[in-house]
Image 1 (cartoon, rainbow, N blue to C red):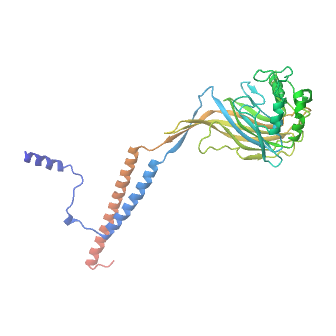
Image 2: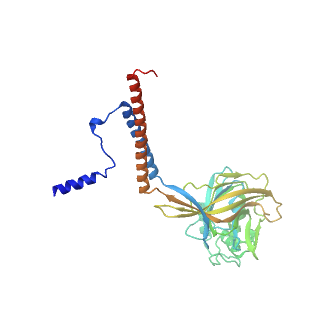
Image 3: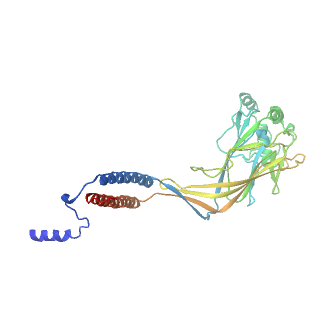
Length: 391
């Protein structure tokens, strides 16, 4: 039985591809030691680099046809108008499907600025959601005095109520009906509040408009213009009334403008751009090409967003009496049929191990060839010296 085992071991030894030499027949040289140390150091450096590359996750882009339909898109806005008061400015949205929304006020906030650009207060005209306007102590007392239900003069508030306690309620009710709010002095609430005088005191102020709007993901535009905006027979109309200031202009700074959810390393071309209006009746136009962007992460939820490119144009218009003309800031956006998909990729463990074997085996093989070359060269030179040959 022992002989059978020894015989099997002997036969198995024949498959040994790494035959060993006796220590008595091996020679250690100084050049071999140097090659060994250098190759070991090089292997260590490459192993650390390969491990770092294995741990790194990279984003790979891919361009595909955007097949998503019926998707909504969020537009994030933050724009400063240093020479136009908040009550004068209105944000409107319209798209290629025919949908129009005049004087957008839900999820849109206005921050009043004094002549030096300092913040005065933040206002929100919307009645949507739990947010409430903050008012001064004097205005609180005035509101308490007018807690009685007043007439809306035939109009209705967006909530359907016909009880208008303040001038702003009357204003909102008229806007909800699409009626012109031409003469505030005709309404008791406005006269008691000195509404026109308050607007006159704000005429030299500036404004920051910020917030977001949700729109259909189709071509369209949103714009900020002066005066009351309304829709009559599918016609979009802006009216500047006599009690509104006429010494404003549309100089502006786009603090932030993006489409969709924010993601790491997001670049918005218009962020921080500033335009100056040397004359009042100037229209600024921005033409935006919006490209859907999808980010797929290995260990985080997928982010659906957008990026855009932009071209700009500005021209002067002649403002008609009692209208704002076409002056303002317009953002025309178009939707690309393509979508950019970024996907996270990380090298597999098998790829990492294969790279390690290639590094170790390759360097040791090259080092062995180099050591053999050096050793043979040294041996040949030594023999020539021993034979007394000149070289």
